[in-house]
Structure formats: C-alpha cells, structure tokens
Image (cartoon, rainbow, N blue to C red):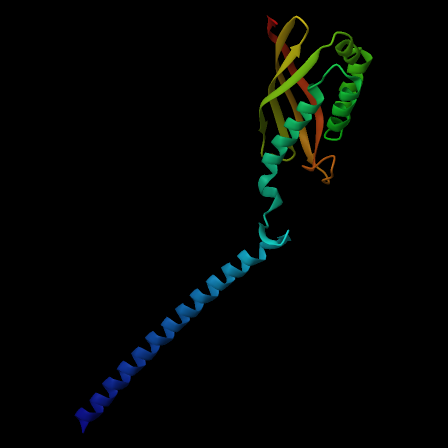
Length: 204
C-alpha cells in the first residue's frame, strides 16, 4: 500500500513538473509572438501605400531629423552655387541671386548690396565675364545651432584668361519652415566669406 502511494506521489510530481514546463513554454511562445507582432505593427505604421497610375507604391516614414546634416550640406551648397555662379546677363544674375537670398538672412543681402554698390555685376556684364562656383565640401558641426564651413573653388572666365580662386565661407544654420523657395528648411545666418584668393590664371 505504501509502495502504491509512493508511485502515485512520484507520478503527481512528474505531472506537476511537466505542467510547469508546459506553462513556461506557452508563456515564452506567447511573449515571442507578442514581440514580433509589435515589431510588425510598428513597421506597418511607418509604411504608407500610394496609388500611382494604377500601381501600388510603398513609401516609408522616417524621422526628419535623421537627415538634417545631409540637408544642411545640400542647403549651403545650393546657396553658394546660386550666389556665385553668374553669367554676364542681368536677368540671369537677378534670378540666381534672388533664389539664393531666400536661403540666407540679411548677411547675404548686405553682401549682394555691397557688390551692387561697387559695380561688381555691371563689370561682369560689361566685360562679358562668367563666374562658376564649385563646392568641394561642406563641413557641418553637430552643435546647436549648426555651424557650416563651405570649401570651394571659383573660376573667373574672361575673354582671354581663366582665373581660379580658393574659396572659404562660414555661417550658422537655423531651422525654419520648409517652402518651395527653401525646401530644406534652413536659414543661413551670419554668413561671411573668410577667403577668396587667386590660385592661378591661365590663358584661354
């Protein structure tokens, strides 16, 4: 009789152990399923479906701040290309400069007005001189506000020669509302040219 009770007790312990293992396994499985379901839901929430010409396209949502340094470099590059790439045509000059002035504060406008007062643009037109700005790199700090340094080369193309200049400028960047005129949503502040010196002059 005692042997029988011992067997029943042993069997009960085994059933209890198996039940606990089963419960733990079910909980682990449920937790894993919940985790992957949460991940899938998050991924789906960051995906947008767009119907374009009868085709279903997928667009992913992304944190806008993740690409800010890249956008800052593009913003500064665009400003310098517009402001310093000029042809001997008043309408072309006005068009480029007006687009550039949307990207910067009064510091750029002051520089533009200084150029006008000194007859810089009139000299370009009278002598048929073209300017080409090539931005080599833009270095942006991670600090707030962002500070950007623009390194580049400027070519002054005359009828008989081409002069290459070494160019360096600096500014700080402030976040502003995006618009058609300012798609990156930055405003260059306290912009100043630190270096713009001749490197060489070659005959054409």
